[in-house]
Image (cartoon, rainbow, N blue to C red; front, side):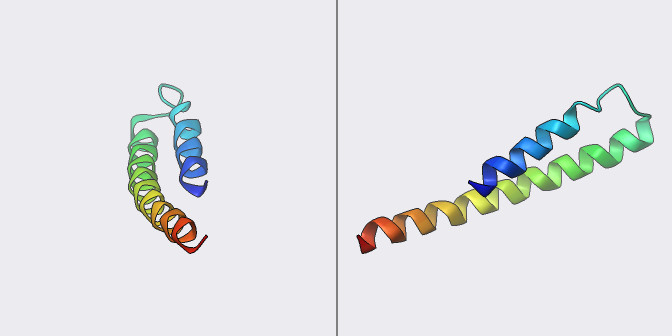
Length: 57
């Protein structure tokens, strides 16, 4: 599912913790937060699509 792929990218960015400067980490944190929000929205849509497909079977 796309939401899982988004969360995977978010986790991969977390590896940078402690390896980059504070300013860069602040940007990565913001990107991770935005990816988390996006993953939640995508997951909600994915759930709607699955329900629609199951109802149409």
